[in-house]
Length: 188
Image 1 (spheres, one colour):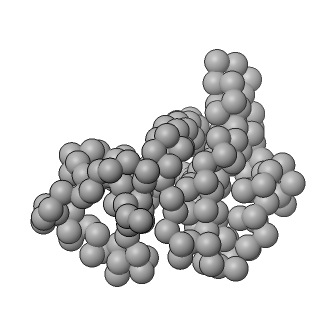
Image 2 (cartoon, one colour):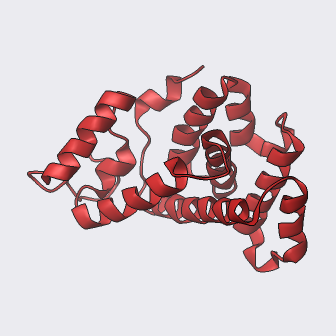
């Protein structure tokens, strides 16, 4: 049995570039682990940098969306796509950020049963519609978000986070990416 984070035989470059090693050390310090998604990309430092740059900008960068709202989008999209990795990892983040384990669980199973504000419901409805039938998004869908209090910049961010996780979900499923076991027990 290998300790590679995917079903593919793509071990990390050895040695890791200095910036990658520092980033992994920072993850260990802040999270207590190096997320397997990062370990999966470590065979190609260029791909890892591209992935982390986009992820960090979307999920941690300046936005009218809270970190929790962005994580909620990640989970709702991942539930539609049945992405095991992202449901486990980002479900844990929702539990941690919200302080409500039941919210993380509801979003993993079916966001429509979660106790959500009208703003959150509109946001997740849009992200899920993007995931299931993006070709049907029209001005009325964007207007529903504006009516719920989102700015046009916020709408961009909702769409960008949903788009990123649709890509990530497909990649994780295609390579059988497995979540770190530690995620399962977090914030329960």
